[in-house]
Image: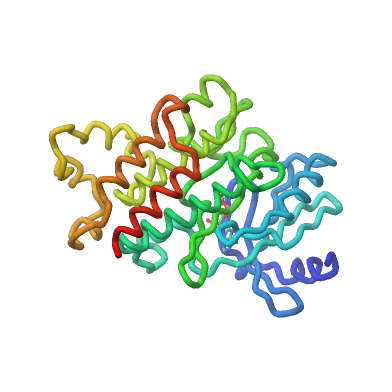
Length: 290
Ligand code: ADP
């Protein structure tokens, strides 16, 4: 309820701050029933206001899926915009991959994280009513719960971000550099396949642990440069691979995983799989492991 949210706001202090992003700061709070939540407080002017905002948020709060971070409530009063989400204690996928959260994801867990987040996105694309294009798929928007189940966060929100947010591309095209579908960028025609492209970049991050742009180099290009058709064992790619998985013995379905990631980042959207095709393919990899 709104009163509960008000109480949360009284708890806001810097010590409860857990992060900050494109829209403002994120705090840890607690509802009166003891449930721990993440409260996203929009910075003044960072989001569009008005009826459009409210309609959109109401829509998002009706989305429920195991692999989507649930929006529990919102408040929208006196210029304040606050969104209350279920709390994800194991942080973002990016934090895990960069070793900052202390959670090591072995290869099998990376496959499960891929499957979970792909299922969340497939749900948004195909089962949510109306369908939702995430628009800002990236490793900082994939969060891990207490069981390391992956959930996608922040879906649909980038539509509501005012222009010129840091890290976001200006003009009509919205998304994050390094993850942005080149076809969408050129044509400004947004489809589900733009999320698929961004998700492919996340899959390459799962292989390399690198960020999509590192030292000015794009991961998609770097991986493509390393690929050699005659190199079925992918030795060329080994120097780009995350050391902790490279040295961990057999990586089930690695070749197939890489192939799928590269299909997702195809220049032409028509050559990319749909999210539910990707879900099936990842399920097959995991099933073959026995
Ligand atoms: P961005 O705009 O960069 O995606 P966000 O504003 O969504 O960033 O979130 C900033 C940070 O707050 C995240 O990197 C994450 O560490 C933390 N965070 C966001 N949502 C949650 C949540 N539901 N549970 C726990 N931590 C969260």
